[in-house]
Each structure stands twice: as structure tokens, then as C-alpha cells.
Image 1: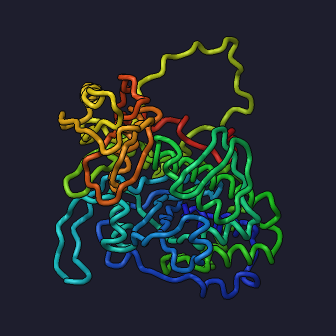
Image 2 (image 1 turned 60 degrees about the horizontal axis):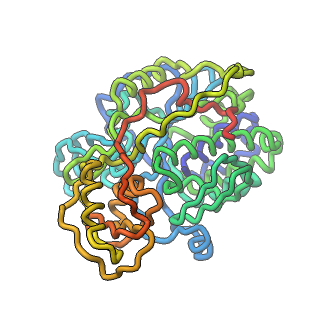
Image 3 (image 1 turned 30 degrees about the vertical axis):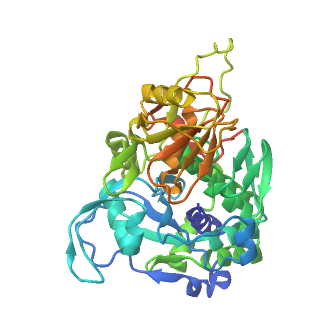
Length: 467
């Protein structure tokens, strides 16, 4: 999300503009030391690896922006987005790998900075490493999971993202399907849209537009970054010293970076990347082996496909592109594909891990028992004790859920097409289905299914068209 803007610094520096424009900008960068006292690090490969993290910091957001772009609530002080940007040794290619924030991780053993007592290695969600140990523990955890040596660290927040998009004059996105998310306020019709900073933040934050949740959101983030690079390289920013300065100031104004990644390094890297273009970039997500991997005390996580992830990070160590260039003209099929029978819905959380209480919201006796039996037959953990609801005039089936179990709720709703999701804070881990008159006795089969291992088709190139 916000981390994507930091790559713009590297891309924009490809104009080769010198210290006359960049003078003073280095002072705007807050410095951290994520590599302090780190030992037994992975061996360096070829090229450069930059860890980009986007935090949910929103201290500088105005009250009007909070209301307009649905930015209320307390920040979690964690990394909402984590990406590895690999810059090839010849500076002609950039590969961006998204690491899901809910990835199952094992934090290396460490000494607690507050109590100064040793802490044993323990399981955690990847994004929580930042809250537990800041940039240093985040870097250590990522290196331990990927066996990639991280050369530089860059961190940005909401305000950086919004201001950068605005100073670029907006970024164009294209969608073939309507995108609507009541949580963020995103509401895009099919077609092409030029988004300002706040709208762009809604676009890259939304994860309730489809069943793909975080995985779908990461793909939209990758496409957005490709569009941002195209905007930066085609709008004249690189050739206009004043606009270049304004963009870099917008990016650097609330960036935190390691002490070794200063203006000189950015300029040297930029000069070597003068011919960088959207076709020079590629984007992918680490392969996932298991969705909804339950861990006691942590909840539902995403477990990486170890073989696919190892292959991906080996390619980065060896400085190899992830996919060959896309052919200029794809062959046109001579026959239209035969219609396929719709497969069971793929969901994030397996039905067996979703506890359900069914209640009857209609005057029809026995309808809740039929719903309970149908859900149980599909694999959901119903309690087999349906009850009557307070209301008996419900037309549409309602799935009530605690927001902490939103993934389970979406999995359950996928089994009940047409049902309404209703968040009830504090409700706990048991989801409630209130049956409406729309229920005709059938429940759609759902299953948590891991995506295929890393394939060329899962790599998005910067010049790919998305609709």
C-alpha cells in the first residue's frame, strides 16, 4: 500500500538530477537502524534488496480526510503492507514481491529491549513483528523467512501515500468489475478512473470487494504501483526539476529509512536506472501453501508454500527475472472455450474451523434445522441446536459476526449466496446465521484451497493491461 510510493524515489531519481535539486531533502528523512547488532545474516546475493513497509500511521491525517476516506479507528502500530523490492545488479529491472501481512512467521530469539530479558523464538503473524520489535525485528524475521539479505529499509505511512499521488496529478486505474467496499468507502464502476491521493488510499486498502481478501488486495496494490510508475515515467516528472523536487519532498516528508540509504545512494542508483520504464518492473506475491492455517493464540494465518517460496527467493538471490517478456501478440483461439461447471467456492478459512449458531428468522417451522443440517453437511462446525430469532419476518439471511472473525464470516457468506453480512463487535468467535425466507434448502459447497505454486502467470509486468 503506502510502501509502493517509496519505490517512486528510486524511479524518479532516474532523471539523473543532481544535488542542486536534492540538496536538503536528505534532512527530511527520519533515520532508523534496523541492522543494529544483527548476526548470522544470509549471504549477500546479486543486486539490491530493499524492504518496503507501510505502517498504518495516521497522525497527520486531517479530520475531514478521516471522515471522507474512512480512516477512523486507532492505528495498530504494525506493518499493514510488506514488500521486498529487488533491483537487479545492472539496474535495468525491479522485482516487487508482496509478503502477506498475515503470513505465519516464527520470530527469532531476541532480547526484549524493555526488560532486557531473552525471549525465545515463537510463532507470530508477520505484520505483528513490527509492533513487537520495530524495524529491526521486522528485518530479522523477513531475512529468516526468505534467506535473503536485506540491504536497505524504507518505511512510509498514509500521509506519504496520499501526498505522493496528489503531487503526481493522480494515478489512473482500470477495473473490469465494479469495486465496492463499505469499510473503506471505495466505490468504482467498471472502466478507467484517475484517483487522487485519498481515493487511491481507499483503492489499495480495500479487502472486502471480493472473496480474495488480502490476496486480492495485494494484486490491486501491485497493479496500482505499475500504474504509478507509468504515470511518473510518462508525465514529464523526470524531466522537470521542480516537479521532481515536489514529488521527492512529498515522498520523503514522512519516510523512515536506514542510515545507509541517503541522497547520494538514491542518486547513484537513479543515474544507473535512467532507462527504467514500466516494462522493466514485475510484481508477484509469495506463493501460499495453506489458507486459514490456525495457530493457537494467534488465529487464522497464511502458510507459505515452502517449495514455491524457496524457488522465488532463489531467483532473487541469483538476480533472475521471474517471467519472460509477454509476447506482443497472443494467439487468438479458433474456438470459444466450452462453458465450465462452476467449482466450489474457494474461501480463506476452512468450514471445519468456523463455529456457527443458526436461528430461525421466519415463521416457517423447521427452517433453522434445515439450515443447520445443510451447513453441517458442507463441513461447518454448527452446534446442532438451532433456536428461534427475536424477529420472524426476515426476508434475507443474515450472517452476524465479530469483526475479529471477518474472514470466517466471508467464508460462511460464500456458502450462502445473497446473504447479508452484519458486524457485531464483541460477539466472539461463534458466528450467527439468522435464516430468512430466501433460504430454499441449498448451501453452496466451499473449501479453503491453496493457490497453485509460483507460476509465470502470477507475475504482473509493469506494462501489462488489467482490463
